[in-house]
Amino acid sequence: MKYGLHIGLLLLGSFVSQSAFAVLNIFACEPEWASLAEILGGDRVKVVSATTAHQDPHRIEARPSLIAKVRRADLLVCSGAELEIGWLPMLQRQAGNRRVLPGQTGYFEAAAQVERLGIPEKVDRSQGDVHASGNPHVHLDPHRLLGIASALSDRLAILDKPNADHYRSRLDDFSRRWEEALQRWEDQALPLKGMRMVVHHQDWVYLFDWLGMVNAGSLEPKPGLPASAGHLASLRKTLQDAPASAIIYTHYQNPKAAKRLSQLTGIPAVELPYTVGGADEVVDLFTLFDVTLKRLLEVVT
Ligand SMILES: [Zn+2]
Image (cartoon, rainbow, N blue to C red; front, top):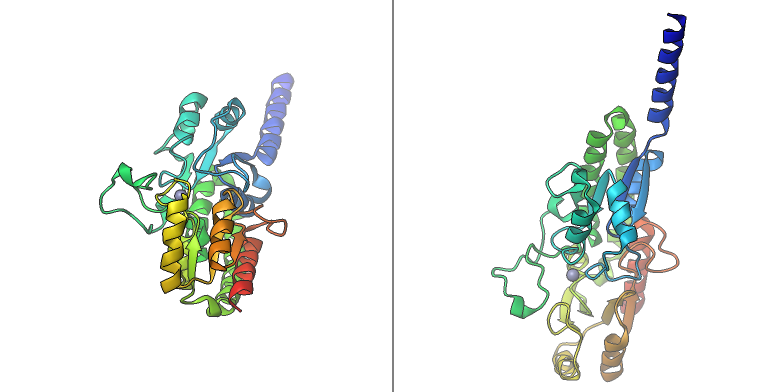
């Protein structure tokens, strides 16, 4: 009897210590979602990111080390809307972890939580690497990001019910700080309204929509295709009639085309961070927007 009670206490002890220390293993497809999951989860989550700011999230190799990480994950947090279509389905298949398959609670798509821009009326693959479900680069609109944060917080609470209050209070804290920052960013960004910018890829649709900036052309003749000399020449001609303030590219893109067009036109080429880690100062989502606006304002003021 005494012995049984002892075992019971031991089991209870191990259960308590396990629930106090077990954390949700989160596999984020991109650094922006790793950063958001860390902010919302705090010490209740352990987050790994499949990619860094130096990698093109459209094109990632499904390495065995990534498969092992998906196998261990309780939750996948990805952009969705086909951004990862070239590599994530393969990781999910190979990992054999049913909890994180599409449709399961352990699979969270950021783009599915918000209204998407750029949904093509008809999908025609001859038009290049078109994002058929709309543009997936949703994190660059801070309003949408707030909605995604709320949905992700709810998902964490479903997966880890005993800590629902913890996730709720972290979301409240994040939302308060984010709304303060949003006010500041929108005040700072007023001079950017109506500015015309050439882009490398359509990564900036949501940023432009938020700030009222105008897309003056794309270095990619079709999504996913490199710029040709002929395409740059025709862009140059377009820009003579309707000039632009900057040519925007990001860390994971080859800067050659942006720099060449800059030489041809005298329009400055500007590297923007795009995600967390995309510049030395960009250590979280707040500094991502701080630095993005700073670099854009430098060219227009
Ligand atoms: Zn894209």
